[in-house]
Length: 132
Image 1: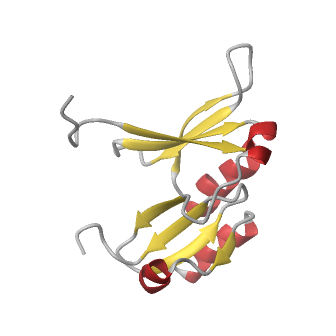
Image 2: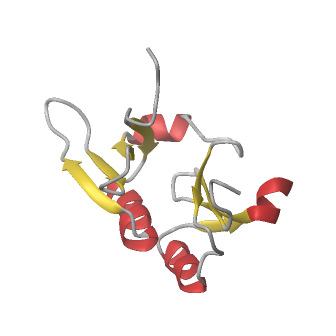
């Protein structure tokens, strides 16, 4: 295998509450809802979010019991390179959707804002670009 930019990346994360997770990622952060599956005989409820043209997406999988046990660490983070500081209204929406602003590592405290989502995963909103 020779991985390159044409390959697609899916990141799956457990959530204890699919509705609350969707509110945080779609309504507050503003990423698109790509696909939704309700709980059925083939598995749990999930929602895929991301940017439609991107080669990656985040799959939020509802599993209350597993989400309680698998608590994320401070290093379990997803970084979005915004190219500018996050706007105050974005941070307000994330807080209203259950996010908590925290002090990140020394590196991310310098280069971004860290918000913990309702399931305990860290989201870093970096004011840098990927090319910086």
